[in-house]
Amino acid sequence: MSPSDPKPRPAPVLDSDSEEFWKATTEGRFVLQRCQDCDRFQYYPRARCAHCLGPVEWVEASGRGTVYSFTVIHQNFSRAFRHLIPYVVALVDLEEGPRLMTNVVGCEPGEVSIGASVHVRFEPVSDEAALPMFELDQP
Amino acid sequence: MIAGVATSDYPELPELTEHGVHAQAAERALADAGLALSDVDGYATAGNHPMYAATMCEYLGISPRWLDETHTGGSSFEVLVEHASRAIEAGACEVVLITYGSIQLSAMGRKLGTGGRAMPGGPAQYDNLWGNTLVGNYALAAHRHMHQFGTTPEQLAEVAVAMRHHAGSNPSAQYRDPITVDDVVGSRLIAEPLHMLDCCVISDGGAACVVTTEERAQDLRQRPIHVLGAGHAMTHAMSISQMDDLTVTAGAQSGPRAFAAAGIGPADVDTLQTYDSFTITVGLSLEDLGFCGKGEGGAFVEGGTLRHDGALPTNTDGGGLSACHPGMRGMFLIVEAVRQLRGEAGETQVDGAEIAVAHGVGGMLSTGATVVFGTEPR
Image 1 (tube, helix red, strand yellow):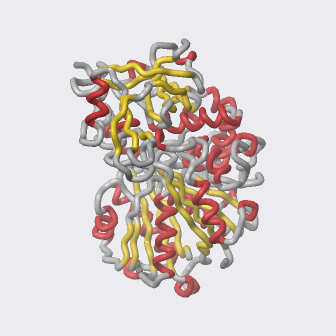
Image 2 (tube, chains in turn purple, cyan; image 1 turned 60 degrees about the vertical axis):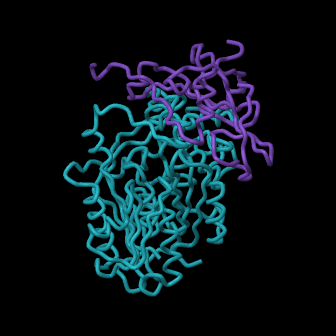
Image 3 (cartoon, chains in turn red, orange; image 1 turned 180 degrees about the vertical axis):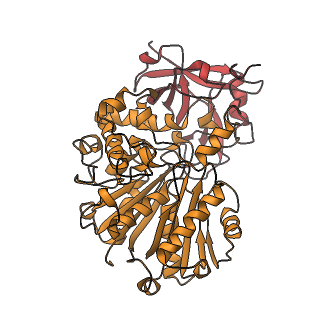
C-alpha cells in the first residue's frame, strides 16, 4: 500500500451508550433516545437524559430533517477522506429536535442549501455499524 | 495584579522542547517582573498531558503551594488568570507564575506521513466520523452566520487584513507582508466559506505572566496592571453539533460577567486582544462581547475598525491570524493587553490605553473566557 492509497472510513467504537444506535443502523433503522420523564429526544446517545437526567428509551425516528448549516471540505490530509474532496459536512436538525453531524450525499456540493429538507440513508463502515448520511428530498 | 509578562521566541523553535519553551517564557516573565524563581509559590498551566502542572513544576524546579491546570482549550489562560487572581485574593498564595509552551509547528513536521488520527470512542466520535475537520467546525458557524445575517466573505476578510497590518510592525510575526481583502477571498478554500487566509497560522511559541498581590506589586520592576474583572463559560466541548446556536458563543456569557465585575461596558474598552483562530471567531466574539449587535459583526469590522488607529484596536501584535498561533494562544492575548496598558506596544500602541480586554475562545467555539485589565483599580 502506498502512502497515498485511500484508507477505509473510520468506524465507531461501540460502548454501552451507543450499542443500540449502531445496531439499528446495520438494519437500516434510525433510532433516537427519548426521555421517559420529560419526553424530549436526544442525540448523541447517553446513559441518561441530557435535559433532566431521567431514564431514556430507544424509539424509531423519522430519519427526516433540515440542513442547519454545512461546509464543503476542500482540505483534509486524512487518507480516509482526502479522495472524497470536495465533500459536504452538514449539521442536520432532525424532525424530533436533536441536531447531528453528517454528510449530505447523492448530489453535487453546489446543490446543498441551508434549510433544505433531507432524509437518511446508511453507509456500512464495519460489521457493527453503518453511518447515517442524508440525501436531499428534492435534488 | 499582573507584575510581569513575556513571550518566548517565536514562530519557529526547532532547537527547543515544549518544556523548554515554557522555561524560556518563564525566565523572561520573572525577569520582567523583577522576581526570582524562588519567589513563586503558585503555578498554573494548561497542556495536553495529564499532571501537566506538576510536570512543569518539576521541570522548572519549583514546589508551589497552589497549582492549577484547568484546560478549556484556547481560553485556558484567561481562566487561569481569573483563578490565580481569586487564589491570591483568598490568600492561598502570593506569586503565581502562569506559563504556556508549544512546538506544534516543529512537531508537525516530524509527524508528517503518520496518517490520520485514531478514532476516539465516547462523545467526540459523533462529530468525527463524517470527515469534518477543525476548520470545518468554524466554517459551519461562518456559513450559518452568513445565512442568518448576510455576512459576506469580504467582511470576514477585513479581520485578517487588520491583523496582518499589525503583524507588519511585529518583527517576530510569522507573516508580515500586507494583504488585501481580495488576497483573502482569492486564497484557496479550505472549508467553505473559509479560505486559507481566514485561518490562523501554525507556530511554535510560548508566553508567561506573573500574578501577585497589590502590596507585593508596588515594589516590583514594572507598573502593575490590575485585573478588574473576569468570567468564563462553555456551551459544548468538541462536538459542535451540541452547540444550540452556532452564531452565539460562550463569550455572550463570559463577556458580560467580566464587564460587570469590572464595572465597565464595551464602550470603555481601549483595546481588545481576542482569540483569532479564524476570522469568524473574531466576528462572533465582537458581537457576543457587546462591541456591536448580534449579526452586525460583518459591518462592524469594515473600514479598518480593528486597526490600531481604528475605533477598536484589536490584536495589535498581529494575532493568531498572522503573528503566532501555537495551538492555545490565550496567554499571548494577556501579554499584549498588558503591554498596551504599560505603553510598550511599539508602533501599534494605542495612545492612552487604560482598559484592555483579553478574550479567549477554546475548542470548537466551545468555551469563552474574558479578562478585563486596567491601569487603575476598580
